[in-house]
Image: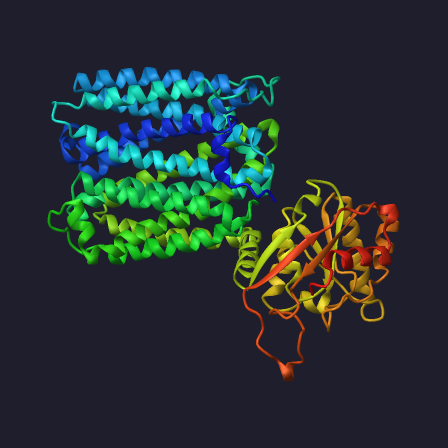
Amino acid sequence: MSGHSQFSLFGQRRFMPFYMTQGLGAFNDNIFKNALAALLVFKSSELVGMNTNQVVNLSAMLFILPFFLFSALFGQFADKYEKSVQVRLVKLFEVGIMLLATLGFWLNSVTLLLAVLFLLGLQSTIFGPIKYGILPQILSKEELVGGNALIEMGTFVAILAGTIAGPQLAGVEVGWPYWVGIACLLVAVAGYLYSRRIPVAEAVCPELKINWNIFSETYRNLRFLNENRTVLNSVLGISWFWFFGATFLVQIPSYSQNVLGGDANLMSTLLALFIVGISTGSLLCERLSGKQVEIGLVPFGAIGLTIFGLDLYFASPASPGVSVTAIEFLSSGANWRIMADLVLIGVFGGFYIVPLYALVQHRSSPQHRSRVIAGLNILNALFMVIAAVMAMLLLGPAGLSIPDLFLITAILNAVVAVYIFTLVPEFLMRFLVWMLIHTIYRVQVVGEDNIPEEGSVIVASNHVSFADPLIIGGMIRRPVNFVMYHKIYRIPVLNFIFRTGKAIPIAARNENPEILNNAYRRIHQVLAAGDVLGIFPEGKITDDGNIQPFKPGINKIIAEQPVPVIPVALCNLWGSLFSRRDPLHKRRPYKLWARIELRIGKAIPPEEVDARRLQEEVQRLRGDDR
């Protein structure tokens, strides 16, 4: 794996101008949205004849409505045309919108400003498929998680900056704050100038014929999502996150005033805590995932969202607080629990969302990746509209409080998480594997690039512990179908992981010929499908830490289906938990959090493979490191 940090992308033209362009766009959106929210919440909610909570949610719904209506149309443009030119045109459109915003502030027109909010949503709708479609074109697979993390961090830092700047500009004593419009216009111009430095990103589907019927194209985009079950479930997970996140983010202005008794500065402070958390969680993803698309972080994130969402309800005051400033709120120890909850909701939100976005980009077909992103945006918008409607109903006719809304959303998150992980047990399986290799073990991988990106291949390793398949499967980027002794396959708890990971139980012919025959049938199916097969040629876990003679079964597999074989050595695993270092009656303490290595050798061509040669290669890789 590359030793470069994700932050090295900041020094490269293929990434930095695009990063600044999208960051300034998010900054602009949030200057305007939060300035308008502050005006409506703290000064002029009476102008539209609705209560504060309903006005805030109506504004949120207006902004996301274009995503629902027009994502399918502009997803086609993102795939058909070169992307850097499209970005520049989008930024010019943003300049025009901000001229209109300045006019709206000058005329004191709430109606015109709400129309501007809708147009900003339209501009983001056009940019979204380009934004997530261009990343796989300008980044390598190893950079995809880190690049997405930086984009998410940049987006939320821009949200934070806009959240602080918007209400401050709205508070300038000049009648209606047309200074907000002027500031947004300057940011839009800066974004356009950065967009001119974005390098060319060629069209991925230039022959595409544009379908102008937004309804039929929306249906078609949603069908694209269904072509790959993993992509579909990842998209549903992302959309649910935006339901959850929108519910919390949109309510913070009203929460700070109506529940905590604060002012606009406290609103900015609470939003800042949430955004600092999600930026931190996003950046930690690359380190925690080892620069691969690690979906095991998704259940981890879902658990944290539920726990700290529930705790925010219990930490909130039962009755509205007295008027406090941001400094007074921060200095009171009784409020630190609320602040910690908001930060940790953000952190676990980062763990949840970054791997899912990277997975969608990685697993989607390049020919219609932007249209998949457009379908994702449609569902995101639908879920956020539902979130806004639910919030308006619960906080209006139902008479519930904002903490009650947080409680309901956290409970719903737990229900949805259980449903998704039951429907797609791969997420939960990867979570258990990730927990194993990041708590009991510290794993270093050497030679990861020797695993080909595609095509049939066999990975053959020495067998040191019961956890060997989990370690190898967790550290290799491609899914591995392991062949393992049927009694190990049936170990409680581990059986769930092995079964979900499509492991293949095997037995000796004199023990159970039916299991053996089924194993060979499935082995042929795996290799015929172009997948990765994992084997342990020793046939059993070592009893003394040394490599045992390799069985000739590999010769039979290669004779029937000649594919490359990659030798793998597990090192320093002997003596750790799950190894057979001691007899049960003489057990000594095991090494916890053991530092182990996974050494991956170069592929052996099928015509050179036999059990003896393979054993020599694994032994050479391992050396004396048992």
